[in-house]
Image 1 (cartoon, rainbow, N blue to C red):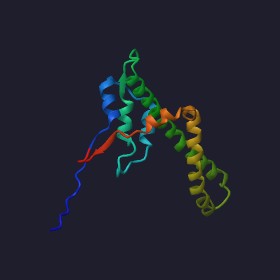
Image 2 (tube, rainbow, N blue to C red):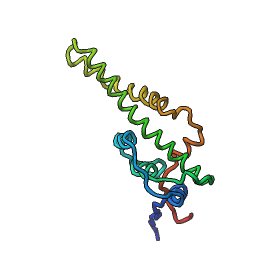
Image 3 (tube, rainbow, N blue to C red):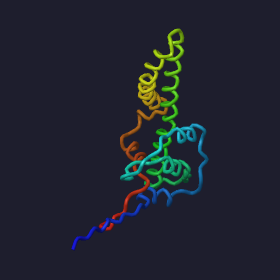
Image 4 (cartoon, rainbow, N blue to C red):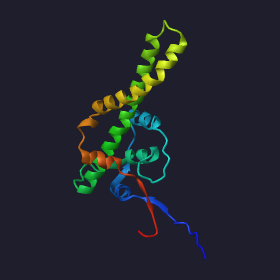
Length: 165
């Protein structure tokens, strides 16, 4: 007899998310650059739950921690929040630089016909995202971030809980 049992998996909060909930003392208001950075963050298709989506980033940024708590757990939570904040704010500069470079290319081709503009614009926009990502990292000091801090900021907020765990 053949049995085709499907492996049942359940999506649960990760360990770092549980620790954040435990250490948070309230809600924090998001800044303007954080809100627009979350708005410009691309949607995520979760197959393995290995990255944070827009909602998870908003949840991390909206938590408030006690500034007088010097425990290692609270330090990890604030470092993670700061890393996520830098990443979200740098997203604004990525899209802004790409749009600015595309606009300047459009303006510099003003004396040419529209076909020549349309050939150049996608390549300039795509290249502008890389330039903007580097520029955003420099402006938010994300390039000076320790590897540990960036790793904490990239930890997923949800994980699969399989039957064998």
